[in-house]
Length: 514
Image (cartoon, rainbow, N blue to C red):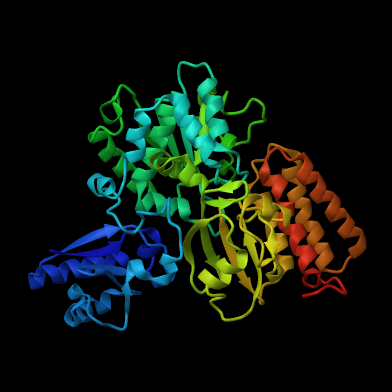
């Protein structure tokens, strides 16, 4: 029986993947063809979606940008044999865009049926969990620490140190919380992983639970991700029925259960303590620290909080060993980073590489430049609160320290590209406006500062007392950076300052470059 692989990922669904799958199913049935349709995640080559793959003796042959209208034509042309067609991109695993990558966390995404546990195991799943069950808690934490794995959410805090703190805390109940409130513009790796390989996250969270003595886990998924929520719930059901989760994890004496909690639509709940407040049924507002969540977290208990990409790297760390993961990367940034190319870009999607690839390689090499064909003016790295960087930063290595030294931040690895038509004064204004809209309101620098920031930028652009207002804007940015309770207000000045520094002419400042 020939297998036809069609993505069920949200990106593919948005361009008609369900209609394509329905049409294939109808024609396979009507023609009595010996074929089976398998719904997968997306390979991450989003500019080619819907990407249909057909299993052949030589490998899976891909057909790009397939619509329901061409399914008959494809079957008539001999797609089940991997026949030539204008949409044929060849053996997908041999596609240069994929072969140049180092897929670790995304190794199975787009290849397996996301809710088939047997498919997951056949492609290396559960090896890390079973290995962890044979180890002591201290040994597991040591492996994670020695791997150099750092949090993939923004600050890059070492995961092993956080786990060690929770392991050493005395409590009758501990929790593992996965922050899947992926709200940054241009980021979609969490969603694609949860929709394309949910068992990797489940396995990573189970290992974390065993490592620190937590028996309960929560996955906080933004409510705007209904397909991810549905897929994770299905996978948890399957894992529980198979004994991977529950009172006896994989037949051991260890217990671990998981539950999905949809977010409440607040950007600030991406901050760990605001997420905890929301999980507890309260308004999502930032908590002051200390105490840190590792000691006083969910319901006042010791809690490990990591995001999807961090926890999903754990199974590979355990399966292959800390040294194998540590061997990848750049300086203190070890392992791989899942970069997300978005915005005005020709080839948007997922690129997983070891830390150290340059910004230019990602934008021009993998991204193929702008979709419009116009020159790149700037890119924003790390979400709406990340710095803007110009093409003079093309040689900057994409790693935590080197990017910070260049005035930027890696954040969740999202890269949004803008061509020369963008007005950077408007982008700077948007940063302040976004902060004013999304602020939880708990601290004055964020709540009031962002509102005043919009007004000051408007005066600068209008040419009103520019020198005075530029000085005022800098003072305001300094106050927000130093005085805000969390990164919401603390990082908002980053895009504002970088836009002003790189493109003063867009603000109407005489003598500035455009």
